[in-house]
Image (cartoon, rainbow, N blue to C red; front, top):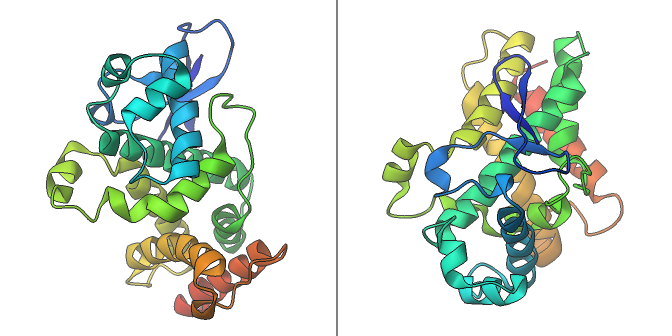
Length: 244
């Protein structure tokens, strides 16, 4: 297994041999899990099947009992990896943000012009999410649907301050910081870079949700061009705001 830690410049890659089949894994905050599921066959099955079930059932109807039945194991085996289903949801969404940062790194690393770097970020945010064969146990398309539908459940909670102290939102914060840095390269005097970036990241998911369920609240339509329209909307917001 190749484990990736993404810092402010380039991915740092180290080789791990927990699983015979070569795959990639992210270094996530260790408060998200009791045992990192990326490093065992059962753990990868838990991740794969939990994404499938939450996508199909919704987070409210999802239970560890249903997950245990899906993977032909026991609830006790799942509890060895995650203390509860909310922590599992936090793990999945944190994994998604690390994957987004990984893709932003790939698509901006060879781009010199700051404006083009920023546009590349917006393309990654707005694009249709598809299966990434570098991570065999994750269905990124289904995971993105979970992020769109369930993201606010990870932080609109009474425990948000404690979760923040534990570092459960590090993935989201890291993506925000990376894109904020690109904005400041374009316009160093812009005073609201982090506010703008956190807004567009949440807005991108909301607009897709509205397009599917509350279409009168968005101009992004549920059709084959919705991702291009979303990109144009985000590009308009960002470059108009930073006056570039």
